[in-house]
Structure formats: C-alpha cells, structure tokens
Length: 446
Image (cartoon, rainbow, N blue to C red; front, side, top):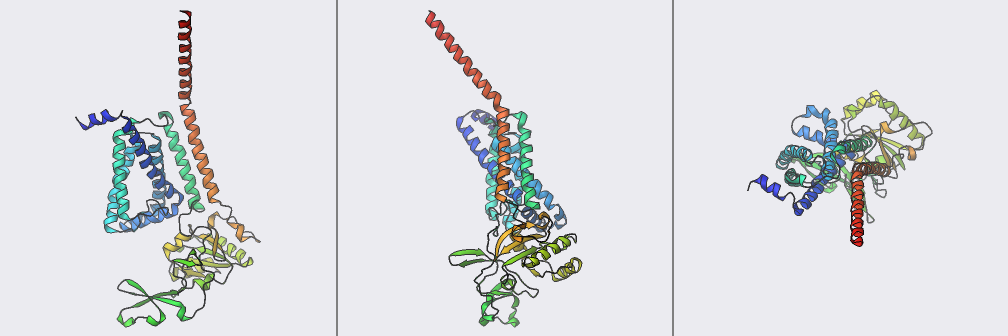
C-alpha cells in the first residue's frame, strides 16, 4: 500500500478527524499566540529583529526591522487563525510549512551558537531557551506535515466564499493592536515594570558612606563584586566598573517586608550608581527615556521642554535617562536647550521600563502611575495635572473592546455564512415530519 493510498484510506476514520482537530488547535494556537504577542509589543519585536540582524552581520538592514516585525506578527496571527478554523485547508498549512523551513534552521543556529540569548518567539510573554525553541519548532513542523496530509479530512468552520473575510478581519485586529503598542504603549505589559511597579525602595538608606556600597570590578571579561574591605589590587589586572548601594542591588528584585519590587539602576557620567540620589528625594518624578538619543528629532525638544516646565510648576522632578555616550548627551543638550539633567541607564533595562523614543514615565513615591510615548501625549497646557496627563489609555479596556469587536465580527460572519445550513436542516426536518405524518395517515385509512 502506498502512502497516498494509506492517507486516503484513513481520512474518513473518526480518530483521524479528532486528531486533525487537535492538531489544528495546537499548531494554530501556537501561531496565534506568537503573532499576538509580537503585535502587542512591536517595539520589542523590532529590537529583537535588530539583534538577529546584528548577529548575522546584516546591521545595514536594521532600518527594515519595524517592517519585518509588523509583517511577521500579522503573518503568524493570520496563519494561526486560518489553521484553527480550518480555512484554506491546503494553502494555510503549506505557508506555515514554508515559514517553519526558514525558522527551524535559524533556531538550530541560535541553539548551537547562542548568538542571540532569547529567540523572542513569544515576545516578553514567555521566554524559552534556544534549545527549547528549536525543539518546539521541530514539533510544530511535524504537526504541520500532519495537517498537510490530513487537514482535508475535516471540514472548516467557514465556507470557502467568506474565508478571505477572515483574513481581512484578522489583519485589521493585528494592525489595531500594533498601532496602540507602537504609538502609545503595549496594551498588555509583559515586561518587569508594569504600571504599579515600585522602581526603588522608599525605605532604603540613601546615605553616601562608603560602607553602604558594593564595588564591581572586572578581570578577563568577568565581573566580580567586592565590599570596601575587599577591594582588589588593580595592578593584578582588576578594573573598576561601577558601584551600587548594598541595600539596593542594581536592576534586581528588592525583597522588603515580604513584598518584592523591581529596581532600576541609574548611573552618572563616572559610572557611579546614583539611583537613590536621583529618585529618592522627590515624591513626584517624570522620567524622560531616550533609548536611541541620536535618533530623537529636534522637533521633539519643544514638547519635552513644555512638559519639563509643566512638571516643575507641579513641583515634580524631571530626569532624562539614556544609554547614549556623554558626547551624544552634550550634543542633545546643545540643540534642544534641555534644562533637565540626563543620566545613564543600561540599554536593555531602559527599553524594558517603557516603549518609545522618547517615552515618558510618571512616578509617585517611586511607583509607576502611567507611561506613554511622547508623541501620544496631548499638548501640555499649563496648569496641568501630571497624575492625569497620561492616564487616558486603559490598556485592559482597549484590548477588551478590540477582542470583543473582532470575535463578534467572526461570529456574525459565521452566522451569515452558515445560516443556509440551519435553514436547510429545518426544511429537511419539516419535510421528514410531513412524510411521517402522511405515512401515519395512510396506515390509519387502511
């Protein structure tokens, strides 16, 4: 018996149809989740694609990372939906197969070389090791191959005439989610610093005695921490890196009174940890985040200066944070006439706090109250209440509305598309009832 004959022979079996349904839900569900998490946070997807391009020596293509991020999110989400509902039963698995034939060797290369530590398949929602990602892709590949063979054994939910509408509705949903994620903030914050996070410990002692600091030195590419009494000899090859307060580990979790807080680390030009000095003395703080300072247009300087003036009127502290070089910072100050101080922060950590270039984060007592991209804030008119300036974006509510409209549209399409089947079923049922009644009448007459 040939393979083709075997496939044709088992397509009508009940177990085959059940297994096909499970494969649709599993393979399609993974694609939907992967595409959705990328669409929610297009900035994060863009950063990850840039990491890939840099690792492959194709940094010159970094300008295309945003386009690739949007295309990848939409393609994965739409393919996943099509597979789940059984639309385009041959074409959808075939496109998924072509995609996985590219992704699987790529993830194998990542697993072997560890060129990019985290593949970013599910954004910040779920982190997998590179080997786990490769294994996941192998299983997906096997599931897709099964669907290529047996997907036609089970009818789809929608008829062929309206399947293109599913693509249109799914694309509109992905674009809407991506719009909010790119131009405002991700509607679902999977990162370590969501709204409500306490960035610094309010009970930490902000004194500057040397005994309160941990010193970090490096040697042969390895960093090691020392107390003031254990400082290494620089003649032995140790180089000073930075220092931080002993009661507030840099960029780590603070455990205090049974609660946990994510802690950021801010440095001055000499590399000293000045987080508590910068943020610890003000009840209200506006953070201006510049992940890519050279790319911040001078046109933004007016809005930034207006926001700074409004914050000062409201007795709030204003601080700029960037991973840029001191030369780039000085150049920005010259062209923007910035009156706010600018400090330094680790690039990856800065991007985790908020998305946008620049982005604005408002703190009260060290707790994040809102965060937005600068361009999404309304024109600042004094007097302005800072606590309300960026709170008009309710991510949960917006995402709930988008999901409701999307699912309602799919349900309405299903009802319209399949209503004739219900009518046909009712007509057949009525006809059978009439035939049964007629047969009963004939028997009674006899």
